[in-house]
Length: 372
Image 1 (cartoon, rainbow, N blue to C red):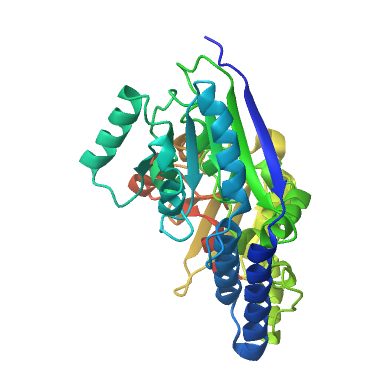
Image 2: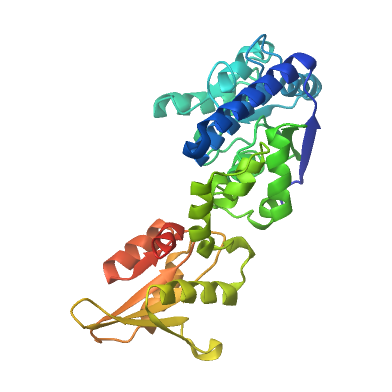
């Protein structure tokens, strides 16, 4: 059976004066602290400030003002009156900024909470009650706890109260409602606060087309890996310290994998190996048999080691089929030969198990970094 349509709306909202004043003060103070840290400032400090500002975009710490909540509340008034029910996702769970804060303000709708601190029995109970009792108009879920594995077709409205900046995670959350058994269109609302860190990051990721090109299950969009140091510091009008700039010059070898095609990625891996004194040959595209590169180097005792390498620049983790294909292409009973599969996005559990049992090496983004 065909699924009903899913209508996704991105809502750009403006804070009221109270929330705006608090946000701007927190951002200004955070930038001052970053500047005062001088050369000791780390990217983690930038990420911590981003997280703090995201929380303020949800609710003002003083008085609890929230333009997002006001919009959710108005929409709930209408959709509940029409007999519909809703799911609200937040990456936060606390009573100040996250799921508990939202629930405490929606008591009129008899909300239920589904968060990571619930036991398996409690989680099952919450889902059962939501399905059986339509008096509960809203189910509020922490994104990581409720983002996958649940069947919640009883709801047809989905609100992303804050953004994970991971399309796959958000898509999985929406699929709790938009799945087989759903009988009505599913409406999805995603919130972005204008003139804040939310909008700036949304703009950068949009320009990189990450929000469009990587809508694949199991893809993880990590701001630290997807945005350069210059881009992260630039969110606050800052430049990275010289220490981070020198690290970047070294890590520039990692390239921007999302912008490389297959041939460019193979050339990139070849360059990394050659820096480490490997002699690398490419195999013809029409006759590679699953092997893209052959790298040779003598080890410390003079024995030649040969790597037969398959390069996969996929957005999603590589599955066992790729590992199986390389295993079949490897020369048999030849000393010093080892298979390697390279994929920056990593590997599925089945692929890892299959490779381990057959002595095939798997190189993800972090293993590539070790080559620099």
